Image (tube, rainbow, N blue to C red; front, side, top):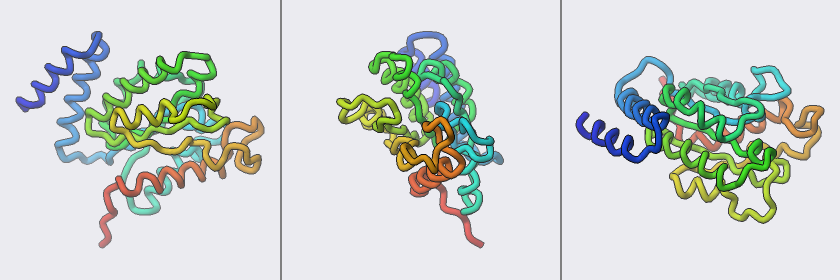
Length: 224
């Protein structure tokens, strides 16, 4: 407990305003919660834009919902929480950070940045917003996966090699995962009528890919 309060004191001295102090307190509480046995299932938190929200399909066909189905079918006891919101920017996601931290997620999937690019926000602003988000979740002990945005369908800058997402993952201890649209973008059979967002089959591909990425991180099912 003494070490926990020492950590909180250091965190509060480095965060720039009251909101980040609140986040630091939530992190401390999350550390205690993770250390204690809990009846609730560990949380996988999916943070993102319209592709995470499941734009264009019923909620049951969104990638987080289909990921939940794969986890359950394979005996993995986790609860997937969908924090996707159409039109969300990194700044908007950052303002809602305390709500996500309160869940004490074990795994965090972050797929943001496209709406920043669409609104012509500076890449440095996007990176710093994401840095704050990734760093805070990492400090809680969560495993953070950050989606790359390196496809033309992601409005990626052709000259960005490596992408700011790849750089940030390395710098902040997150794991880089492929763009959510990888293997789906450009395939009309996997997209809704807007030619941009996946249909149910497209989201199934996204969910299967993420499930495969997560498997080494997941607690192995107990077979009787």
